[in-house]
Image 1 (cartoon, rainbow, N blue to C red):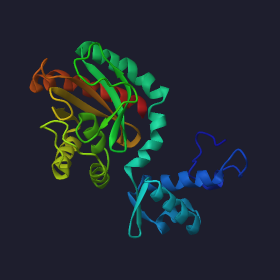
Image 2 (image 1 turned 90 degrees about the vertical axis):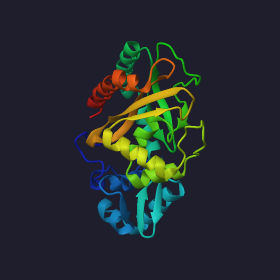
Image 3 (image 1 turned 30 degrees about the vertical axis):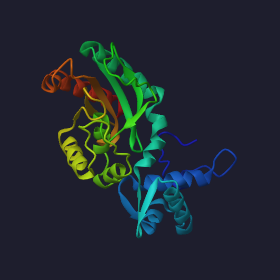
Image 4 (image 1 turned 60 degrees about the horizontal axis):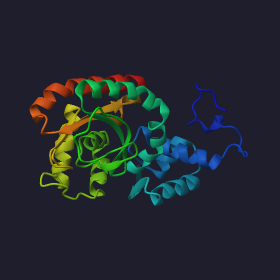
Amino acid sequence: MLALDEQWTDATRWPPGSDQFVESFAKGLLVIAAFSQERGLTLTGVAQRTNLPRAGVRRLLHTLVALGMARQNGDVFSLSPRVLQLGFSYLSSLSLREVAQPIIETLSREADEVVAISVLDGPNVIYITRAEVTSVLRRSLTIGSRIPAFCTSMGRVLLAGLPPEDCKTALMNSDRRAWTRQTVTDVRKLEKEIAKVREQGWSIVTDELEVGAFGIAAPIRGEGGKTVAAINLSTNLARHSPAALVKKFLPRLIKAADEISNHMI
């Protein structure tokens, strides 16, 4: 086993292949890791970054494309949002939930509203933990529930954490149905909304997934400041006006997001 201070991306330090170490799997992970600093790479670029033979890199890249975890534009390969699914097991593990649960329970209790954390899973967000005192929303969402990313505050925060090109791809692949009369379905308008979220660092969505529903969300950031999850407070507009909700809850939500983020770094 590699020591914690050793770079697993250095293939020269790998243990020899055996029934306990699958070298081909390790090479696939190495190819994915090659994109950590560059969004798009040629086959030659990946081979140089990984020190793997071009023939093997070609097969691994085309496997990722076939699985929908990468895309090819001419000679350039890039990862797709679907590759985020590989991190879901970690994000939904006990460690994140242990850190986040007492924080969101405190916020839920103080606000008397539903608070949840989710991660991006393709065109959807998936709930990994939540807390509520009472719920006035019609939708009953539990851990593991999926909702569209494009029309929810959590989803737009998570999409804002992607490079703009990947964000557009995720939007294009979404089932952008009009859940209500207020649902924004046009990709260009959504890109503008998400660009605003990216700039201000939080998102508000009203009446787009459910009539009368209000959601406000902020990013949870991991190493390097990357968005790894989103925290959301949701309620019904019958209880508050949007302006009052922002004034009352946004500072608390951002504080909770920062507190969780500090444990993720």
